[in-house]
Length: 145
Picture (cartoon, rainbow, N blue to C red):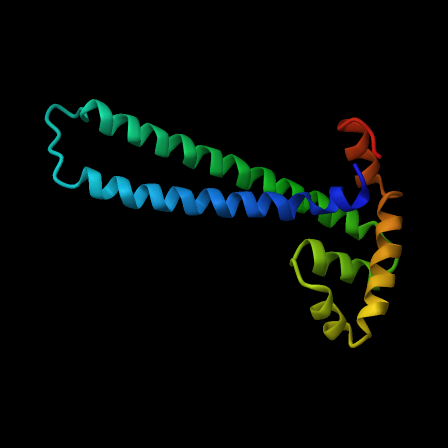
């Protein structure tokens, strides 16, 4: 896994969580309209309705597990970024991989040219490979490219 792939894990998972949450909301909305008017006697739902609820619960459990994983990844990335000695490198990587800022936004915040942001970013990414967080993750997950 490259340093970039390592650092982008949170971003990719955040996108997946957002998609799953939208799907869940859509399905909840649709199932609510299907469930309207259903009278339950004896505390049991009709067969098809129970299956819909089970699927919604399963999807909600999946989203909750993804969110737990996301929080773990973000905490790991924060710790890795904090290992870097240069404050500008830490700021650029935090802005990029924790806050999901664009390079232009980072340049504006630092009041420097975007080309300099790219240089700081590239140097920081080289330094990430030397951090304990990256090495530990690489060791657990089959090394690095």
